[in-house]
Length: 224
Image 1 (cartoon, rainbow, N blue to C red):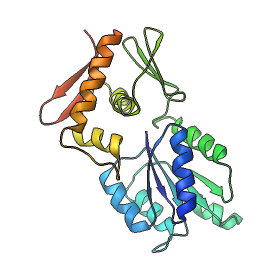
Image 2 (image 1 turned 90 degrees about the vertical axis):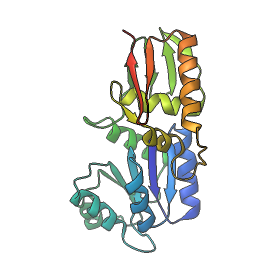
Image 3 (image 1 turned 90 degrees about the horizontal axis):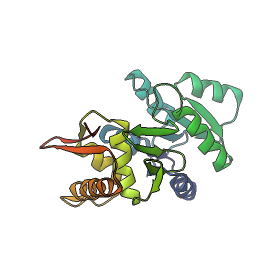
C-alpha cells in the first residue's frame, strides 16, 4: 500500500518514510505543493500525509484542490499549527484527521490504519481469494492456513492484485505500486515480479491464477 508524504523538513520526512516503511507501507516523499500535485497526477495513493507549511504554497491549497475535484483520497494533516481554529479549518477543508507536531509515530500509524479501515477505504484486516489469505497488518501470507514467504516486491504485486481481484489492473498501476516515484524500473521489471509471484503461488498450491491481459495488465482470480 503506497503513501505520499508531503513534508519540507528533510529530517522529519526521512523519519516518517522509515517509520511508515517499517509499518509495512511503501512511501514516496516530496517537499513542495507543486511536487505533491505532480505525484498525485501520476499515482493513485492509498493516503497522503500532508504538512501545511510548505515552501511554495500552503498545504491546505493542495487539500482544497483535491476536494474540489471530488477526490476522496484520505489525508492526514501534520502541522505545528495547533490552535483550535487551525484544527477546525483543516478539517473543514477536507482533512480526514489532524495531528499536531510533535507527535508519536505510533499515533500516526494508528490514525492512518483507522482511516483506511473505514467503509470504502483500502485497509481490511485480511484479503482473501481461494485458499489464499493476506494479512494486511502483519504482511503475512497464508495458503490453506500455512504461512508462506514472499519477497517484499512480490507482496506488493500480490496486494494490488488481491485488492482488485476479478478486475484488470493496468501494468502501469502495478509498476507505480511497486516502485513509486523514485524506483528505477527496468523494461520488463513488472513481468519479472509477476512471473515470480505466479511461480511461488503455484508451488505453494494456492488456488488462484494470475491472468496476463496482453497490452493492458493483469488480473487475479480464483481457480475454476
